[in-house]
Length: 110
Image (cartoon, rainbow, N blue to C red; front, side, top):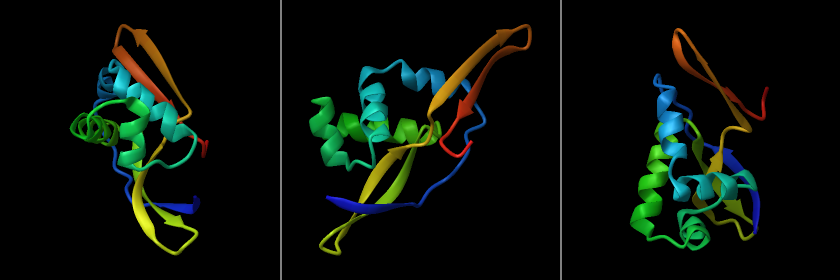
């Protein structure tokens, strides 16, 4: 199993509604739940979601673009490494007011 993971991507999306859009998909929600337990490879996520690998990769890309998922390198005990994905948020707060819809993200760092 994995010994450690190293985050390799951190970009920001200006559109907060993209976070809500991606959460409307069951496969994307399953990926977030799975990756909240620790970094998972696309192959592991394909098994977990019972979806095709093409579907999983599309959802991974949507989650990456929405800053809800990060790509990382997972190092195995035997010294090998693989690309994996981990969730970047612990909670989302949605506020609706006269200015529109605001999505606030809470991550494990603060």
